[in-house]
Amino acid sequence: MEKKIIFALSVISLVVLFVLASVYFEDQQTEKIESMAMVDTAVFDRGHSQWLGSEEAKVVITEFFDPGCETCRAFHPFLLKILSHYDGKTKLVKRYAPLHLGADKMVMILEASKQQGKYWETLDVMFESQQHWASHSNPQPENIWQFLPETGLDIDKLKADMSLPEIRGILQQDMMDAKTLNVRKTPQFFVNGRPLLEFGDRQLLQLIQSEIDKHYPNQNVN
Amino acid sequence: MTSSEQKSNTNWTILFIAWLMASTGTLGSLFFSEVMEFAPCTLCWYQRIFMYPLVITLGIGLFPLDKNAIRYSLPLAVAGWLFALYHNLLYSGIIPESLQPCRQGVSCTEKYIDLFGFLTIPMLSLILFTAITALLVILKRRLS
Image 1 (spheres, rainbow over the protein chains, first blue to last red):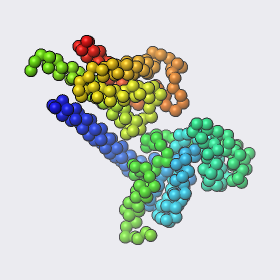
Image 2: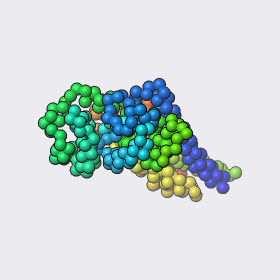
Image 3: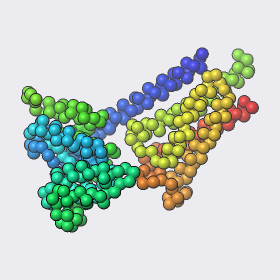
């Protein structure tokens, strides 16, 4: 009988220890990122990134994404909806965390398309054709070239622009900041420097709403 | 308490400690991958394959104390120990990097943690597998 009690107590203490350690670890991570947000806001927006929404917005959503990531594609329309819902109050900053194989190539294409003012069109085509080039088991980034003409881009100019030194700089800076902020999965969101801890559309909306309430008090947004 | 009862209690304690170690290793590795989000490399997966079932086989062997549990658990512990040994040799550079069987993605030699200069994750694994194997061998001797 005594042995069963020892065993049961061990199981309970191991599980409790695991849960406590997890909670403690998450708290530490959040604290670390939030204190960083106060000291160095630049880590969330270096000013070189493409953004949507309002320049004067007090709620800045930083998204680290990968053009080859399925969830990033699925989230994109949802983000656009959020921006139009909180029109004038939110700004979405698109930053890169190219984790998929060949995704860094996609980032360079995106950045080069900026030179022709077709960033968002290119991103749309990239997401739409994603299944043809970003398969996890057999990624074929070269396939993207079949779809890029749909954007109306000058492909020769695009190819030349891809080697611009500032593009490599942007890619490296984003990857460095992603590492600093411990971005290991995409998409990862930070709203005014506060990390989205539990992933999900509802959770993201809650986080944004709490920042809206903080920065735009006494206003009814509906 | 008779001496045979005492002996049986010691045997139970040995098996219990082995179970406790396997459980700690299991939860610890889950903590690294699920909470700290370190992606497990190929070799880590093989060690997990041999560590996780020990929680069940050793745990069942405790109630009632069943020496067959050694029969089922020892091969798992030895296999896990071999993988852990190999992993540590790779990690410390004794086996050259070019021989490593890891694929692109997660390297088996990437250092995630390093406590006190020697306690790396593969080292923790090797310590646990060594201890569990040793306890099971001792128990086997005591029971035969």
